[in-house]
Length: 178
Image (cartoon, rainbow, N blue to C red):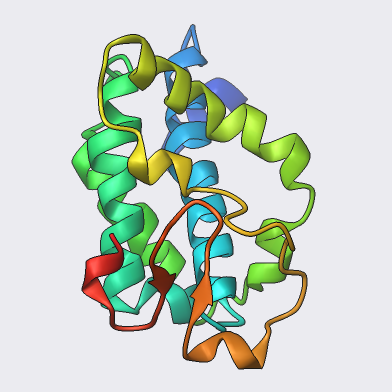
């Protein structure tokens, strides 16, 4: 019988799917600007529409298109290439994660501490896009869209809630709200 000795460095990629890299900057920005900012966009828009959980909002075609559109059109262009990562595949994976009903993230939790999160996740995307003259409509809605930050679902908002950043109400199934 042969005995193999693996260092932690050798074992992690095999057993955990972990990548060990010299510089994590591009990976960190990818996570912050796509996954974390996507949570913010989904959290506020979904709460305003009356959803309670991330998977509920992420499976609504209007919100799925809004968040995916934000990630593809506004966040992705601000990212440098990420070694060994296809950003389109990563965005698809993030959206599948958001839509997974087994991951019971409440939208209220996603909206918590947004004054700390928005400057780290969304504002850099806004700034980068403004600097080069790109559209920022989705980015400007990827955070609190109302003076009253939702902490619990407002059941009255199921039919219509006006966002401060929009002249149109967020409505479930209203594709014109993108």
